[in-house]
Image 1 (cartoon, rainbow, N blue to C red):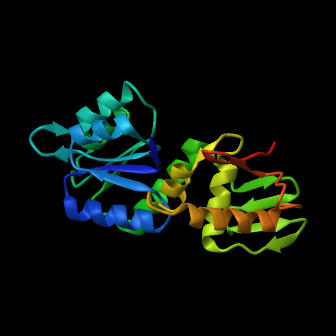
Image 2: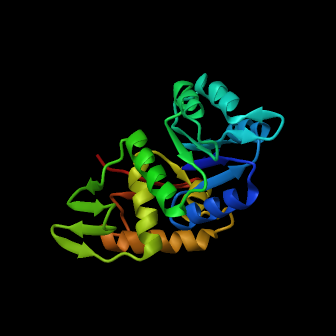
Image 3: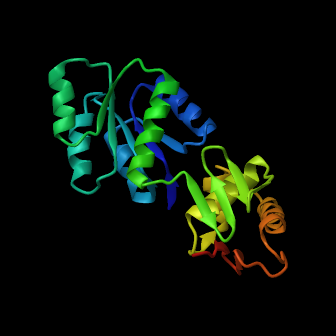
Length: 225
């Protein structure tokens, strides 16, 4: 099962694709579907932490109906996106379980900022991760050890952050490919090289790692209190 940050449910193809591409480019893993059936099919095989939901979805369904159905099974944030501007629509959207109402057309930078803020609040995210004598600042994207910065390349940082945020559980290679590289076809060799580089930077003995453990036949696990 793949995990996404955001699912867009909107039949306005050009806007949805551009929003999806923009979000993915800036680190918010996003998927797009155009209707109710595709929305619920998505959740049979995937997870998402937030939904951007249009109201007008053709003749078959509306965002209001989808929201009501989703609220019977999940409490993830639902942000309505719509060109409809009446107060009645806004009140209905919020009263049936919507968390916010964003009017179209929207600026991509503004809606991304809203989504990141809601995701952070929903997840209870912290800005600083720590393990041992290390701290990782998710705002400045810096790794420090006893006050000294440990230089990381972009993918090394992204991989380490994911490992720490999912510590103490086995992480299959396929999950790392999908959620770190956003690519199911990343090679084992690429992952192995990045793991080796991280071990060289954070482990006292890279050959006997304390933090990044190999789970043979599966992938890796980050072990820390």
